[in-house]
Length: 192
Image 1 (cartoon, rainbow, N blue to C red):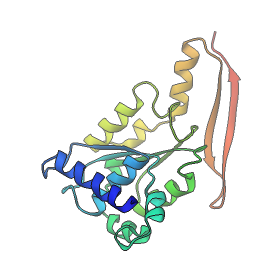
Image 2: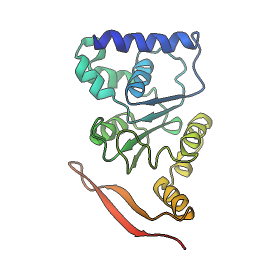
Image 3: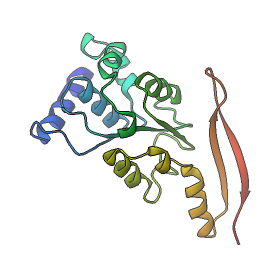
Image 4: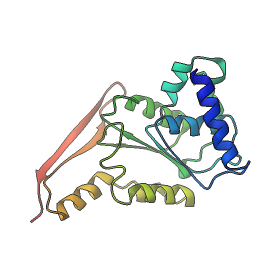
């Protein structure tokens, strides 16, 4: 079942690096869950830098529902293993597969940065446009200030689109309260 699949994926990843820690981990959805479970189960020591795109950790753990993958237990094992300057979660605010609230909780519990972007589960708009993914990976690998890389990627994307003569309606996400998530619309227009 699901537990065997998760265990198999972690084992394949650990074997692929021959017992060494990778330079960086980039995991999306299921891959993000596998990466986090690998860290929790100490498949890579030391823990490598990570870019986690809508990591489905809670979803995978809840569906697995066994002692080895109990969500609260996994979170406890992860605490202190991910360095805030070497890890980031990127989450689409319109994601219906991995709830934005799940990534918010994960980031808060693990004390790592969370970048909410206007996107769905595929994150094909802002988060992965241009060279942003490469910049995320380089920043976490170098342990540099993620704030510089995470500076308003929606604005960077919008500027690139406007430069190409496209109309852009930019949505800048913001957290309204602990119980809800809303987006604040920007202005529509194009740069001549």
